[in-house]
Amino acid sequence: MIWLYIFLALTAVVLVVLMVIRTVQIIPQARAANVERLGRFRRTLQPGLNFVVPFLDRVKPLIDLREQVVSFEDQPVITEDNLVVHIDTVLFFQVTDPRAADYEIVDYAEAIEQLSATMLRSVIGSMDLEQTLTSRDRINSMLRGVLDEASGKWGIRVTRVEIKALDPAPSIMDAMEKQYRAQREKRAAILVAEGEKQSAILKSEGQASAIEKVFKAIHEGKPDAELLAYQYVQALPQVAQSPGSTVWVIPSEVTSALRNLSSVFGKSHEGPGVGLEPPPPEPRPLPSLSERSAGGGGPAGEEPGEGKPAAGGPSKAA
Image (cartoon, rainbow, N blue to C red; front, side, top):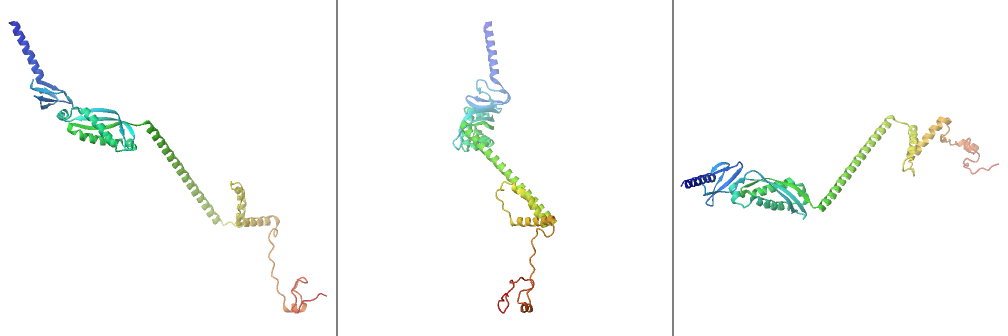
């Protein structure tokens, strides 16, 4: 009899312990659990100490309310210009409604993965390769907006989408590298040409300014013909040393200057009157009528036979 009482007492203790265990539920922080009573959703247990009806309520597995990270690696995507790129993405999401996450979708993690792959193909398919490589921020914002809108009814909020890697095919990479190298060489050649152009312009402006100053100084000094002729002679050796000195084209001003220079040197070394052109002959006076009638000859000083014949006819020599 005593053993029967002991057995009943132990059974009662075990039942009490089981009742307590099934009644008291402790939910950790940032977790949630849905409760079903007789197969129907009853309520959601919040973090802390919670009580349920044993044998009537069933507590479902815990749902993590923290932000979660899902990585999707090596997804082949075709761009608008029919080129294949491999994209690795990282998705950040958070469960905001435990009831919807538990009852609206079977596996929300797999659903988000498939939805992100579909949306990624849709977004990348509307861009060409160059836009895809240079518009990561735009792709991230578009994916986050589409995924957040689609997963809202599942009680999930997509907080962030990042493209971890975007790798075109090796042949495409080689072609792009050659194209970028050609563009860089083109820009370098353009910059060199612009530099040479600016240098030539500045050099021409400097030469023009120097010529203008020299011209102004010469006119202010009022040089005579002898000085200009001397400068012409000094400039001739420099003209002879130039690359185009095979044929010389000497203007008439140079010959006149050389003539003036020779006259100057003739004056200084040979004395006056030497090396100069003879003065023009003075005009002779015409003979008067008395001289013509008396002598019948030409004017005084004229050699015989050089004058004009008289009016009465040619005179005969004795």
